[in-house]
Length: 213
Image (cartoon, rainbow, N blue to C red; front, top):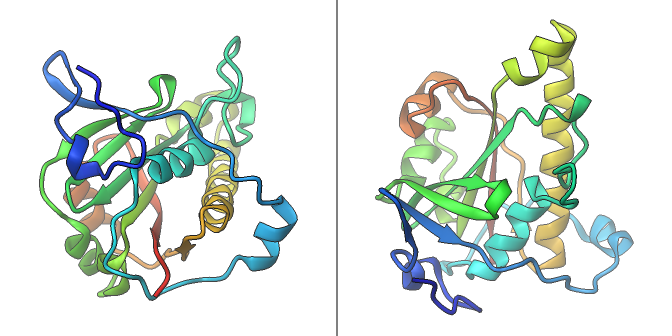
């Protein structure tokens, strides 16, 4: 069953789509705001104060599409460049409804943890409390082997470069949507990995996104 998710909150559609044994949420297609890239670059700032207001599913769709969404069907190219199109990045988001894994191929979310873990993420990020206040928290992780098996040790550098491309897209998309964001690199890798129940993925980046206070 697919719900009309236009403008809806994550809570309102959380169990609208069930595929197989896993809860899956189909995201709406991204909508272009019409704001110029130059304006987004000029207005981008690090924002650490957020309103207690959830993001709509459309906003979440746009943010995740900008991070890793497919931009070409034939070869599956994505919104950020990737060395050899190896695509090592795996993107998660956390909000009041839990933790979700982004599935680029179907532009959908897979529900991983069904409780609000934003405060736990903030604690793993050395107590940076503003992370808990953001409407969503984006976590960029990587499976290094996808790239290093082709490029060897040099592939580690390529993964980190790609994470930077991904993060900048998120920050600029946040501006395009009238939202604020901030890059967070200070966190305990082991605690965050355990919290997110990561296996092959390694956490690289935490990006709170929300309505600016």
